[in-house]
Length: 129
Image 1 (cartoon, rainbow, N blue to C red):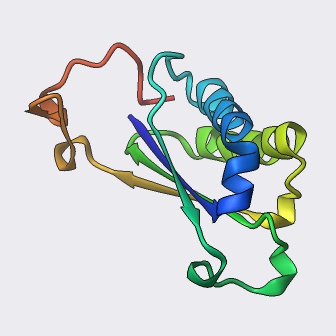
Image 2 (tube, rainbow, N blue to C red):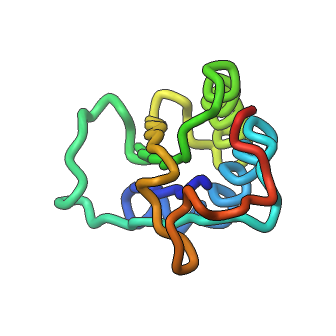
């Protein structure tokens, strides 16, 4: 499972929502051998006063938080971050210094999905990549 939350100024989200979505999902599929049909994303468009960050990050400053089942290798997580830093600027023009990424892993037992505990859920993809 990979749940993605993207935070940015409203103008950035409005201008790049689809290209961000595609770039992020492409990176997740590539780095984590993730199925194409498992796109779970939320875009949080913030008004300027509600998004406080250092000025050197630029107007397009974007935070990407990805929650994952634990089990991915360090190599897979490094690959994901690398691919995000490659794909997002190419798709949106947002500079890498304006992007921050956080991966948070939790055990499957901490997730509830489709009415069951995820530890009891049969997945159609591997987590141990």
